Image (cartoon, rainbow, N blue to C red; front, top):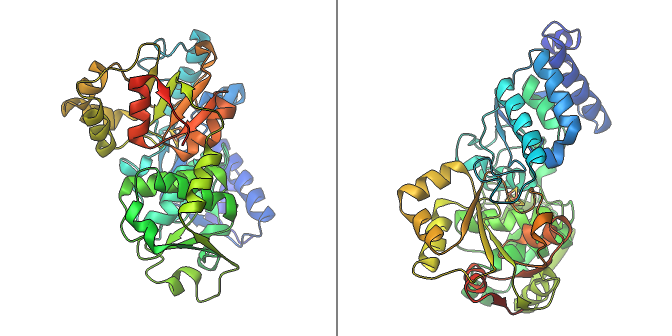
Length: 413
Ligand code: F3S
């Protein structure tokens, strides 16, 4: 790999041990993937902020880095942690577990990481521009940054993201290379589907696209109108059921003004037609259990936006969550504060629902609850919670989720 004089000096230790180690790791990664050089990045986003992901090794590694004077070189934000820092007792998190997460938070603070504790950093504090190179992890954030914004990042692993943050660089390969961003698998939506873009549609379509595409780049034609939250839900599902890190939606995302542009002038390797039958079949797969009594309802994956908070408040106003059912809405402190000022939090809490801030069902230890059946409107939760929370999962629309929380029952669609 070609290295600049400054990069050689970093490797010689001229800028300290943390930078030397970080660049050595990135160099090895670049060599393994055939990178030709390093790229300067404008920001990093790190998943090793979560104790569940970083573990004891994280405390040790970050502790050493802090002792050696490590500071991030570019704007760096933190992914959700493994506790709600304000309410972890309410969520039955063991005290020693919470202490470990708080320790990681202190260490990241000392390295200069912005404590956003969110999987949607692109809404506040870490908003990339089109064409910028980034060093991000968190699959749902990576796919949003690449696809909806047109920034460029590979899906970095925990710790590699911290290395990128410490030196402000990543090796140039994969999605940093324009030719590697061409669409490969074409999904053509039936025209009659557009009449039914209900809120379950985008996570279900994302789930289907991820399953078929795996780690290739999908192109979707036939979506005419979407919202920010629908794109967020679509990408998170595709990144969970597959390992999609970039998608093109023709006429919607910035590198897909036309089908030809999305495919980079080539023919697709595969064409898939998507109609009502395919969406229904996917929704069937997204539910692992039968209908019946509900223990917990999870919405806000990825973290809820202010528009979603308004929707939850509207659906819950004057209603009451069923006795014995937990309705948890995941979001971040920035949205929480705004929603509080706008009266949404009051409506949500009066109904007996809880905000789960700076974390989510997937990141927290929930063993103490003994949940058996979870209902969600998120494709990513639907994919992971059967394993991480250990429950059956029923996928439903947002309205269906709130309804399940109020009635205490859910039917499998
Ligand atoms: Fe975010 Fe947790 Fe979902 S990190 S994307 S709310 S699984």
